[in-house]
Image 1 (cartoon, helix red, strand yellow):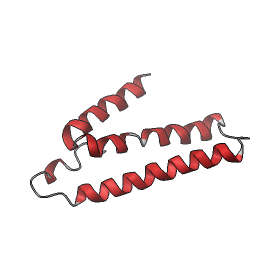
Image 2 (image 1 turned 90 degrees about the vertical axis):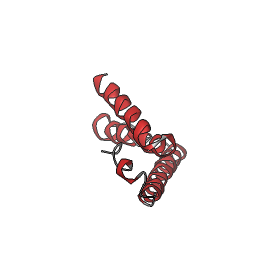
Image 3 (image 1 turned 45 degrees about the vertical axis):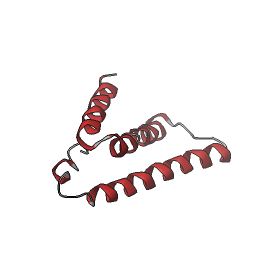
Image 4 (image 1 turned 180 degrees about the vertical axis):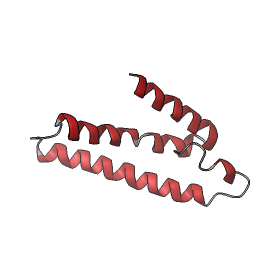
Length: 90
């Protein structure tokens, strides 16, 4: 439980520093970490049907593409906000 609270706190700080439009999709990458841990340590998704695997891989791909696009877009920001562009991303 403490780890989840830590992620929530970091997400709140990221929203404050870089704004909701950039921090929220990157914050959702936490679900990918949870998915990886579930698969690796708890053997989740083993024996799942192709429909479920397609949905999970499609969602994973969408989150990763969104994170890359937002990371690129935030790196192109004007110099006025550049000192905060990486503050909420660790």
